[in-house]
Amino acid sequence: MTEQRFWLADEAATVAAGKSLANAVKSVASADGVVIFLHGTLGAGKTTFSRGFIQGLGHQGAVKSPTYTLVEPYEQLQPATWHFDLYRLGDPEELEFMGIRDYLAPGNVCLVEWPERGEGILPVPDLELTLAPERGGRSLAFRARSAIGRALLSHLAEQADFAASAGRQQTETDQD
Ligand SMILES: Nc1ncnc2c1ncn2[C@@H]1O[C@H](COP(=O)(O)OP(=O)(O)O)[C@@H](O)[C@H]1O
Ligand SMILES: [Mg+2]
Image (cartoon, rainbow, N blue to C red):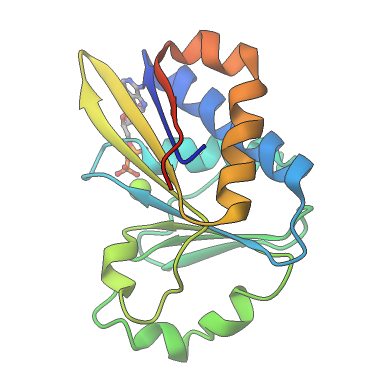
């Protein structure tokens, strides 16, 4: 399974989708770590989705947008998670100065908004998702880019509650 598409009626559905992906990450628990790219224009819902994901891993407090800090750490979570927003990154090389290699350490999860800004330095992700305004809500398309990404999509497909609340449009495609 390499692609899945959903339609999210409202903000709560976007948060629920993030939580479902967190559940999938918990069950796939990769020793290699997981890199997830979030694509979409300003206001598409990337931070909203990330909030659902981070709270789904058990974070109790608020989830700040890392627009100005570039990265917010959630090291206490299992797995340890880093939430990036690279919108204001001047040059991909700045990621090296930030110590991106350490963030990408085995077992960690990196959620990356605006990954386009880090091209050339960021690795190929395990999973990419794209949010876009559609019919008053949002479309959400996942694309797996690794075996871990495909395993995550399989787990996501098994979460009937998410599929129901998200209003699945179209299920999987199995081309690699
Ligand atoms: N499925 C949805 N339908 C309608 N509005 C949504 C949906 N998901 C999120 N939103 C709204 O869209 C905005 C998204 O903001 P945000 O998550 O900060 O976007 P981004 O991080 O992509 O710039 C928020 O106001 C949020 O309430
Ligand atoms: Mg954002």
